[in-house]
Length: 417
Ligand code: HGY
Ligand code: MN
Ligand code: MN
Image (tube, rainbow, N blue to C red; front, side, top):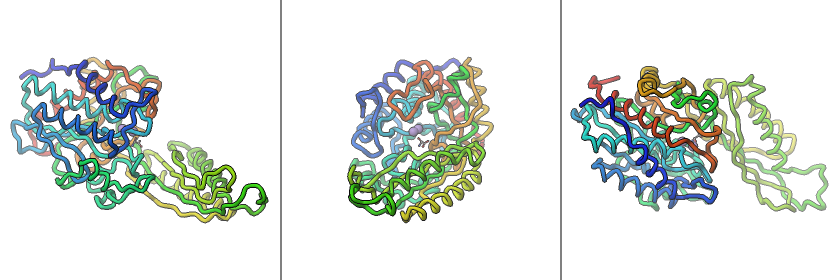
């Protein structure tokens, strides 16, 4: 069958995204579907229902990752996979992650209704807990599946209320029995919003990242001495929050001190007892360092640790550091990246070769098989916020590029790319 003129149904893609956006909708127009929350469960239930409507074989693995498999003509060939994540940030956006899952679903629906047979099987995937916001780290399920993270370590990770990731999987009914272990995969594509300003600034519709930066996450715990704020002289205080404040500014100046090409952020902090008339004695905060150069990021961390020890020593606030998680930078498969660019061109969409500062499950999939991503513009370059937005026609364009990249790749019957 000549599929060159095939296109996805943009209105149906929009309707699915709008249906999903109702689950965990926030008053300011975003979503809150934290990993393994009741909202995540409702979105998963709807997603599974939609998979079954187009006769996909649904499996759920031990990390709750949901796979939908579509037979290939030559069904014993290794599959081409595509997907992303349904979970969101707290007060996050309506496109991050879910666009890749709904975009792949729309491709599957289009193939189903046109009775298109592909040489290879196709698999759609919703990875559990890509965001890492409720249970750190991010991309945990794709990391376990790829063999980079241990399942039981992931199960033991706790949220701020002390609930364990493994227990929450049971609670929402998504702790599957299929081992969360990789299988031979021919190629992986992930369709996603850019979450930055490049495509919009350059007036391009399709982004083809050459890869993803490394992500290094750390947790810092400080112990001070609580006391009444009134009678306690300033001299001799061990104020954990002031120590943290100095450390947070050291994180902020780190990229400059490392001559750039890096971002470093403190995004989360807890302060105890957090009462306006008690000197804080316990603080926890997080550090996120990203760079294309993993060694550069490690050198930055060594410099930062020296700063932290000096500040903790001077302020008498003993410190505990957890080197929580690192995922290497992911240079994607050049042939597949070129395929994204060529396909965009064939379909008449402007396109841009770029890099992804945001982490994605594609970071781990890149350790398993040839991988590439398809980006569409984020309006105002905003993401992880309720105003996150992408034009519907760009969603449609990106899904059409995904459709034809999947068709081309799933038509190849050689054993390995
Ligand atoms: O952290 C990230 O870039 C992704 O949202 N997990
Ligand atoms: Mn995402
Ligand atoms: Mn995200």
